[in-house]
Image 1 (spheres, one colour):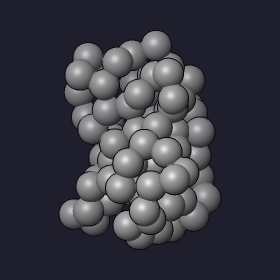
Image 2 (tube, rainbow, N blue to C red; image 1 turned 90 degrees about the horizontal axis):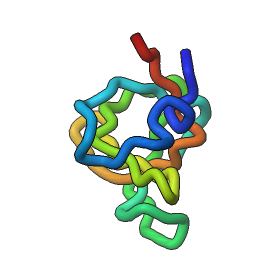
Image 3 (cartoon, rainbow, N blue to C red; image 1 turned 90 degrees about the vertical axis):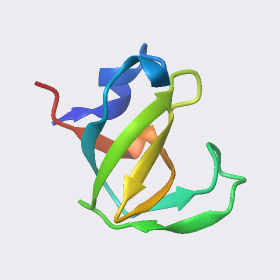
Length: 82
């Protein structure tokens, strides 16, 4: 696996298709791209998410986990890049 942040660092959100990833550790799912936003839930370690897009300048990614969409910090997401 490759760190999602490294794989997508230079890519803007609309420029790529959805990517499957997993959380490297228990990871907060937030209402917006930053630590000040409300926590909507927790993605468990190794929990699968679909990455909708990432903000390259801030490394926050919009993800869907078990039907809930929110934001997760990209440094803690891993994806297999083919």
